[in-house]
Image 1 (cartoon, helix red, strand yellow):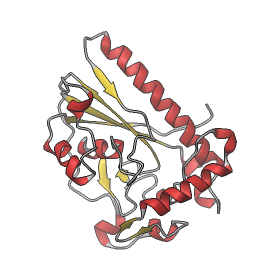
Image 2: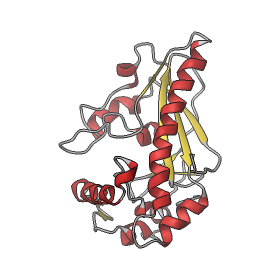
Image 3: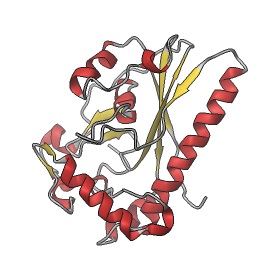
Length: 228
């Protein structure tokens, strides 16, 4: 692995938080509840793994998708799989049950909505707020990867932030993400998911040696990339 990272963040939410039930209405009826993954669910753990600033700089400066960003996407998905396996092993020694979902490609193919949204889990677990770019912006920014797990142990929930992390939502002085979207899929009114995904599939063709690499990240290159 060549990808480097900044310090990860972790947050906790009660598996019984009413926001989880609301996701079936907000995202879609197919979205899973923590108890769908683990019948004895008590807590949802969410992690944010922020990329090193050098990776962000490479993708920000490149007119195309930087190879560093593409590699980071692939390697971090593999890292998340390893984290999930090791977390299950470790917590099993304490008699704690764990359920996880894969890092990506767990979405409804018709409308491209997630079956299990790691970003939404992280929101409920207090890691940040959503920006105009449709990404969760944490205290360490939004340029990185999220993962989550459901466990049978009860952990005190992390308070959710009361202040908007998005510069535009806070004082209407940004929209870098909208201007930097290479296809116009992102606007102040929302995201055209089909147009965005078409761009991701085009990028995948540029990196055949990496396997499925449907990634872009240009909307995560603004001032919210590394901090609030």
